[in-house]
Length: 87
Image (cartoon, rainbow, N blue to C red; front, side, top):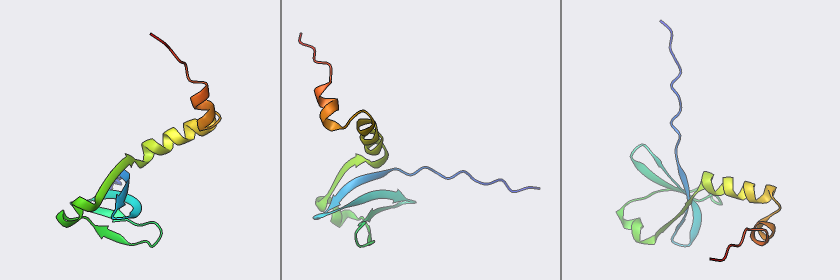
């Protein structure tokens, strides 16, 4: 009998702010974790953190849009060449 490798589960990550710290939020198992990229500190989010947590956009979606904008000339070009329709 041969062992088959289990596919990795794709995890979502979000940009977030906890208190005044910018970082990333993800869920591993049943735990919701906040990572501070500057210090490497990981905080397990509990009910006491909810009032101090702001969840922003999903990391992969935001990066995909950023790359798309940069390959078409940057933010200014995208904004200035957008089709303007008046009803």
